[in-house]
Image 1 (tube, rainbow, N blue to C red):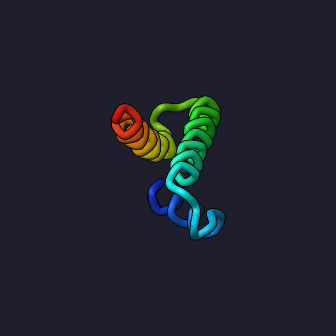
Image 2: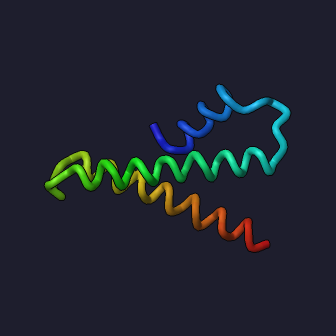
Amino acid sequence: MTLQSEWESYRIAVMPEDAEAVQLQDSRRAFHAGVAAILKVVANAIDNDNDPLMALLLVVQQECLAFVAEDVKIWKR
């Protein structure tokens, strides 16, 4: 399971097939913003940095940061 695969599942289940690029991009941004918010909530609930869940959260965080970096490049064009 990756964030990308979860986005694709969400997109297929929820977005209309004829959605315009701007609608898809806005939805993808909102999806990643939701993930980032829940990451913060869960990370704050974990007391121990050595918790195995923290390692998973860091992987997902890196996926979010990679999306933001790519989105910023696209937005600045």
